[in-house]
Image 1: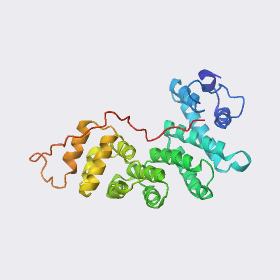
Image 2 (image 1 turned 180 degrees about the horizontal axis):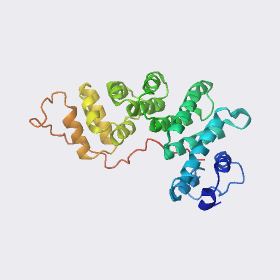
Image 3 (image 1 turned 180 degrees about the vertical axis):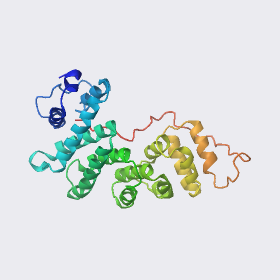
Image 4 (image 1 turned 90 degrees about the vertical axis):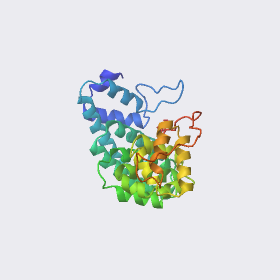
Length: 280
């Protein structure tokens, strides 16, 4: 199997190929690269997409991913192995983000609801794949309709990783609602705050709205948030922007300026990734 052969497949054949590959059904064609790490099975698909001319292969791949997601909704994992199903769904979620198609967002939401119910059974890997699916849903949503879903999950979920991802999804759904709940996120001692704020700064809503929301926090909470921004690897300019816009006494910008206190800006820290694909 090579890029050109895969690009020439019709939607049905591509859907079948995708199903077999993501379930590790042998023979794997091409085989997974294991020289440095176990290659995620979707990597070859994504590399093929990057080299494909025009939109024909992309559209066929959207249909293939959609058919796999639909099939997996009614697929019985008990007879095939729940771990394999979870890894397969994680790969499909990652592909969905790459393709960025609204239809895949709707199917991802159905899987998120199903996983939320399944997690009570404490199936292996369900908690991990839930994070992958929520990330895909957060990326693919295109309106504020999921705001109640994210807010309920953030307020009620026991897993700190899910709470963090829910806040990320809430910020992308309704930034104003997320910023109104910023204090709860900052007070959460279990959330990896540097990872979360890095995503809020780099993606949405950005450092200025985040800093303005921080102006309503207590001094201790603002300091905790500032420290998290620093530890995430933010530049001195980002930290200065936070200081300028988070001061609750700031009334008239342009007349009064806040001089940032000297702090380490996390030079020795690697920027945390909010998401890393599951290795196959």
